[in-house]
Length: 159
Image 1 (cartoon, rainbow, N blue to C red):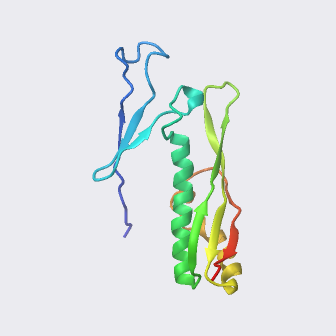
Image 2: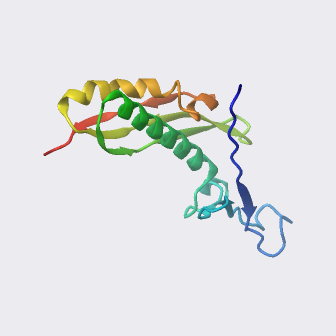
Image 3: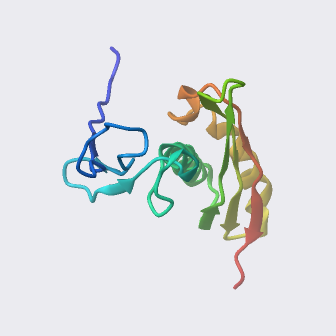
């Protein structure tokens, strides 16, 4: 039997400046991403596309989703594999490549740069290797059509 999980979100446009979309420059790209019981995410388009730089844009949220899924599965694999992680921080980077007409584009790569601290030096090699196992189980990585590279930095906790 197949198991499914559903994820419901609402995207609400908040950028009507009074005249709706009567012109390309007459409206804001501001919107909120909403889900029951959660704080709203203030979002917009990329500033290159007339968006608000102070708000999250869809491309950033996609890169964040890749990084989050990788981290959560990595921590799981470490926990069941006997690797004690005490700190984890990822400086993820995504690239969007525009098509030649300039009218569209797509995310063409995401590079994850997790900085991981483990409890003991004996865990470093296994901790490094487990990053390679994540792609096979991460829901987001399995759902996208662009390469995801990981360049982990491993450290040993100072006592």
